[in-house]
Amino acid sequence: MGNSNRFFPSLAEHQISLDLEAGYNPAPALVSELRDEVAAVWGYPLGQRVEVCFRGERSAIAGKLELLRAPDYPWDRHQPLQLAVAGLVFSSRDIERWTIL
Image (cartoon, rainbow, N blue to C red; front, side, top):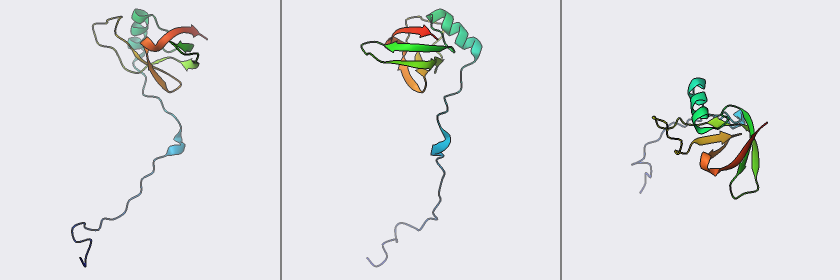
């Protein structure tokens, strides 16, 4: 037991910067033409500033309504969309109502 590092060779230490002060950066937006087509089919004001109220809750959030992932093609209006407002990710099925601001 004299050399406890016999099986674990010494490695040089490296530090990485996590850049925690950078702030929130949303995922890259989908191509605006695709977003606009999905907005027309599903009837949501994607890319616009809205207030969203959620089902079963008395909470609401305001901000730009973003589509996080394109739905499957061919379009099916019954497929839920993955959306976000101000960094809060939710499904289109979670929305009770929305208002354009």
